[in-house]
Image 1 (spheres, rainbow, N blue to C red):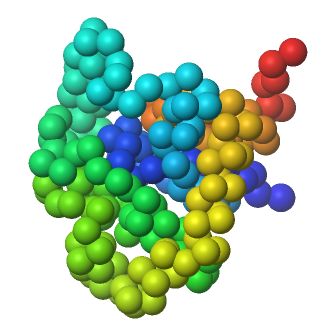
Image 2 (image 1 turned 180 degrees about the horizontal axis):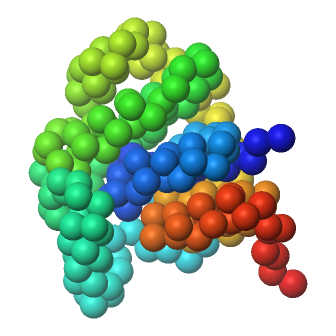
Length: 206
């Protein structure tokens, strides 16, 4: 049976953007099933000890900028350190991914486009018109997806994903959970790949 990885993310996270393609490559190399689980990032922070960027100590804010530059260089991806529309409410954009999954569609290309729109192209992914263009570009019925994203079912899934990420002890995003073992951060993708390829038993906290 193929391994399953629960992929927790929000499209507002620069680290989720930086790790998106690398994570999918690792999952495909191992033949793993990916379960896409967008969530409310600020509720996760509040529950598990994280802080929104503006509330972090100045040294942590400065160090974040160094890390983003290092990983931007390592991943070979364009990334604005201070995007025009950051911060913003990622809820509708995240729920579009939920709606795509619920419709049986693969959301990864939409996600990559939305990540890049915010982090490399100075687009406002809280704007339904921007999301409609991204969805249409990738062959989706934008009106139907946006309507579903605004529906009760998508909202309930968003909340459930958030609760499950909190219960999995993820301090932040992106997060990958394999057999109950959490891997926090796109800098843990190699560790996740090793776990997938080795088939080892998950590590637990005693």
